[in-house]
Image (cartoon, rainbow, N blue to C red):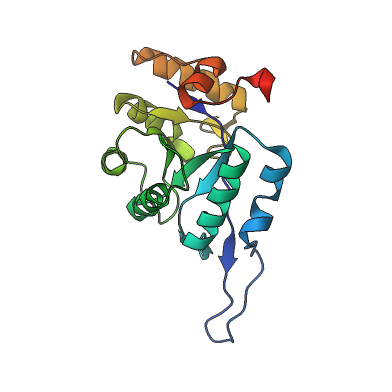
Length: 218
């Protein structure tokens, strides 16, 4: 069992009022692929997020085009950064399958099922099961839910044979009205995973499982 603390990346495109010429509104942070991954190229982490598609996100469009993804995947591959393929609905899995078929992402791929995001897949058993069943065979996968669904989705991913992600990016509270720390969220997730009969792996074990270089060699 892997507990994942990897964050996301992407860009929100906020449009102006519909009675005005098309223009971007305050809050837009949409940039091209080169700028999006500048920090990845500088720091060369073991794993980097690859948000595999676009969706409506509140009143914004969270946008990543297939062309952007091909560019980012090529840059990751050339520099030895393992893509963490973040998918927010079933169509994103189909796009990821295409990138794998084109040889831009090495097998076995690493997927993150992102549940409970506004207008994406809901944080439900049915949605997680459908997305898991749509994944290519032999991949590694994790899942998370946002807000109050974070720990229920930890339990569900464990029961469905996946790995889990927790952290303040997805949920700020340990319980109602009580702000959390990342450490507290990890401790609660570990306890839940172990109560369900699974075991949380060490960082060294995860590096071996995912084919990452040993920490001291990087």
